[in-house]
Length: 193
Image (cartoon, rainbow, N blue to C red; front, side, top):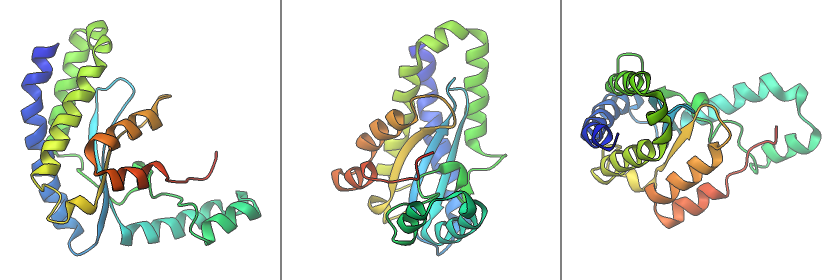
């Protein structure tokens, strides 16, 4: 399994760079604040989600309209005072992604094939998957794949399902960001479900 992940790591790096370049053109003049690579609990899919301050403002307003009647006065107050963000750290609610015909989709296809061919071995080696993703992501960040102001952006890996979402996000954010950005990320506040 190590051989598989070491062979796919440079391909993942190239996929991240190519997909980022394409999505950044779509974002144009908006201010990027976060990029996440998102997988599933089986570690067989991978997509890139990006968000901007401009999209966040619009998305939070729309989301608030949908859930407003379900919120307490205290929760509304927290939102109005900016203590809590509704969608800021939820990649599945973000405005931009690598899309259906991305290079990352090709990586997901390879991951799925490997998992199908050796399900138990693949499941036993999820640590290698996360090491690969962090390594390729970090290299892309260091190479300014997300623009010249990329040190101001928050990066993390997330999962779309499973019990260890915060653990994955926090551990990856520690490796991928400066200490200052990491501390800000750790102090993120969302509404309690």
